[in-house]
Image 1 (tube, rainbow, N blue to C red):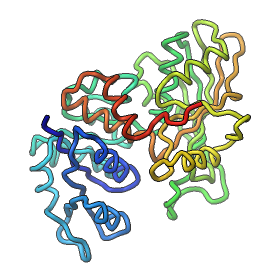
Image 2 (image 1 turned 90 degrees about the vertical axis):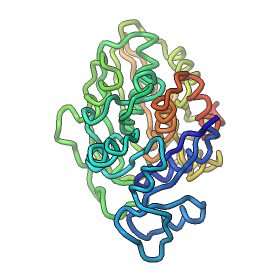
Image 3 (image 1 turned 180 degrees about the horizontal axis):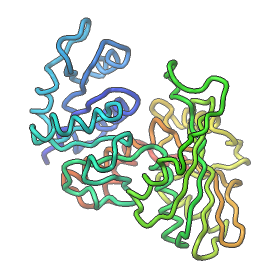
Image 4 (image 1 turned 45 degrees about the vertical axis):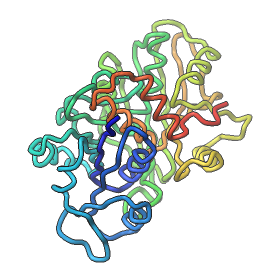
Length: 336
């Protein structure tokens, strides 16, 4: 079997994780990553023997095997993890001329690609496509859980408040230090973005940023067409892949303890790609379902990128791809 030849453009928070994930797939080959400058990320790539390709000329102290164009000549597909707007520009400037398929991330606008993607919700939409957008961490989180609820009870309307981390843990340049910052845009962009995955979803979102780096939190109110049952909802979410139920009894009461659980599970970089829902935070009032979930912004889209690669290269079995990705990334391990 010929392996899918993959290149990673942008070796930051998402790019380095996708690179590690590609290395674990027996049907993929990581041809290389791009380098913009000499830094600790590129040092780690060198230690992993990942071939590096320079974006703009030579880089002092860094050994590269070629440039960006050289990389594009060797790959079947690129996962572009560049800062927003750059990846969509790369489609027109580089990927189309080289006839290379490309995945971009959630910071890009939906119209820049042929489909937006969450594997559990709309895998088929990416099959054999040339350009696909893996949606943001928050959109992925909302889409995963709402899709399960919609299939069981039907959804009339969703109102969700997103409590967003101020910056990633490594980021010393951004984020509120001593403030809660409201997103003065109604709805926030997350609701319309969910509709790129679940087109019939009636959803309204608001958002605030807080002084935390660990995870995002979502407080979600769902008006269901049929009356939900708390115990049934718990079982639905427990049984669904890439969603994890935690509870007060096991002393997982905060995002900090979720991250500690990820460490204790032996996760690479202490990642938690599952969307985490608190058992005690699930409630029902008439036809309203209320729940609280946490989203690890650094890792929940990594598995989506791997599944998107397979779909775009013509692998049609969504369940088989999700299972394969989960096994290699140890997703759902230790669920209880």
